[in-house]
Image 1 (tube, helix red, strand yellow):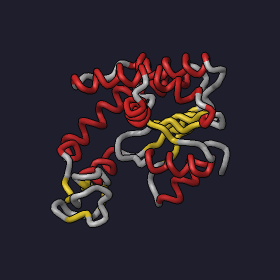
Image 2 (tube, rainbow, N blue to C red):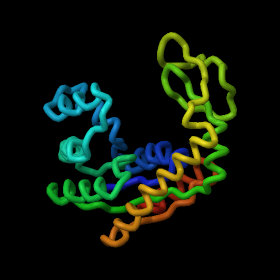
Image 3 (cartoon, helix red, strand yellow):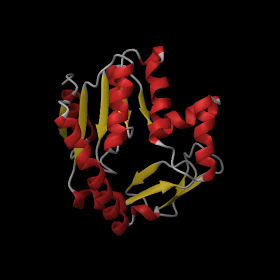
Image 4 (spheres, one colour):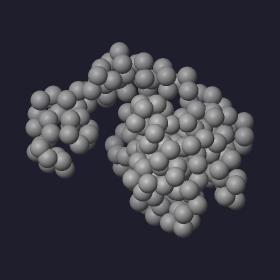
Length: 216
């Protein structure tokens, strides 16, 4: 099963993707994960991507999709995969469609996590993040020690600049500008786009996401 996750920043799609992947027994991968893995493995595409990283440039879509194709062609992805953050723009949706077609595979479902902007602003602006390992927290204040930090020295909690209310609203505007055409593209190409309410307890949202992939 091939599943694409869409949703605004802070909607919880990363966490829900992990949970759905665990139930389905398939991996969840993101663009960042596959690029870092390719760089670490020193593959030809990884070396090319590293050049863009080292210069501070964005990795081109064509290169990203080349790396994604290698991942999807691997035997461990034979049962399927959850794709989180792989598709953010129409060119990326088109690129993924071409990759899947070349591999003789098809997209099963697009899960669209939905949540109101005001709730997202409140959620993200109330979030702190460990400055060492990047773990996010809600309900904890900047300056607190992250005693269980997986990196040494132990991290402290900070509020990211892009989690300030004005910055969050700008991120949401960018998301809407990019993603609305993606949703329209998928629907116009006959994809199974399933909206999922992302508001509620963790288990409740997971149950809705599993229903979207036919496991509810």
